[in-house]
Length: 165
Image (cartoon, rainbow, N blue to C red; front, side, top):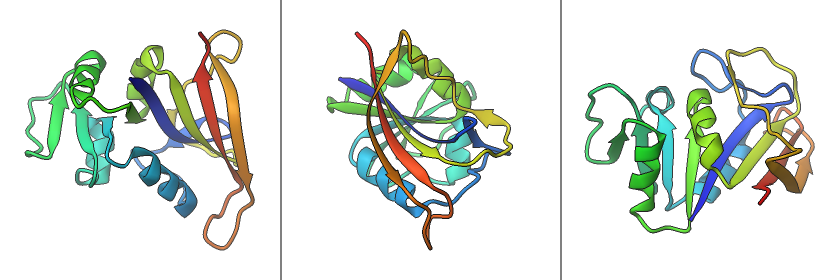
């Protein structure tokens, strides 16, 4: 089973501020939806609360140490290992880690693939994506770049990274 991270990060690896995204890129949202549809997604409590509801069409797994019940559409896990185990029970080909920053750090040792939307701007934030080790851990295998347009206010590149064996 492939364990993937999916993330949008600025050129300086910022992914958010005050538990919010810092850009609105409809092309990235479409890519995210198409990539994760019908698959388990794992996220932290803050990410889930910023969404406000479970993402439709996916198995939503929320990592938290708090004793909470988000309803029947959300599975709660206490740590990354438990979250991955619960996601793997659905016997899909791929699992997605969707954030936030601390969850990405915890998931890094387990992930095989990173789908990154590189947003070509330098921006201030309080949450960062971990640095990708291109020497020992990951190789960039595919890129697809796009210029800003009427709907997408930044240039951006879809990148696919694979873990080196």
